[in-house]
Image (cartoon, helix red, strand yellow):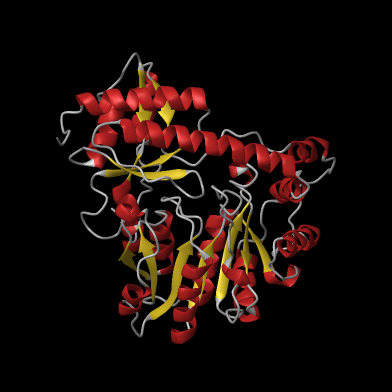
Length: 399
């Protein structure tokens, strides 16, 4: 019998999606599942984007430029200049979601066997992107006790080897919701310059920064013009996850030329998605203010509700719409499966993402989960009530 490749065997399943079959079976049994596991906002997509989709009158859905529509890249560059990132359309490649942007960034800059460093916990799909590219992720620990702040740069530096090519940061963070300060970013910048590394910066949640804090882009740091590769996406900013439109942004023209060759290999990014994304750049500020207020309300309610549960610890996220939560359970993977296979309260249950998939160090995240506060308050309230009931009755509860 023919066998799949070693890479196919090594490809990790998503901790966010691997329990979907269990959720589907629960729904078949008539159980309502509150999805706290995935960052799919229920916030309406901006009206300007929906209108562009409804009024498009083309007769053929054609290939676009491999780099993305020029009109969209020019308009997107103007958006970046408006937030203090001085670039033009030559510094942008439009991709099929942020995931393709990350993959192409790695493929354009890393050789098989190279290493990249990132704080953990980290966005789980980076494991998949690294596997695709044949590179190794080395991690430095951040901890729930200090809200998953940037680990000491000295700890990052200890991991640098002759095979190290770059550092990855997600800001604001997924899964932690942590927002890096300018001081923290400048510490990373100094390390990047000292060792002549790339800095891969995932900034898809930049609009979601709370408590008066503001986002600082790595693209704004001086002296890193040839080092920074930024990943962006419309998925979360405009609640357009299904549009599958992202961007790879860099001032390094060698990187952009290499990235374009990968873009050519897949022909073009989504044509209709780019129409929606370009129109979204006209979204009025009132939309973002309403979204901000909604997420603040959801975050505050959920964090307070979680921290009132005996044995639960949940730092208050500074950005994005996720929280890493410590639970009084023996094993969060077992707990997440149990929620879907064995538990229900009044024909309802919740789905969470076990944190083990966001760590690469064995044993870390064993009693943590990632929760996305992407449900409206009424649903989030019910989900928290159900989670509290579940923790009370879980056989593997740790006292």
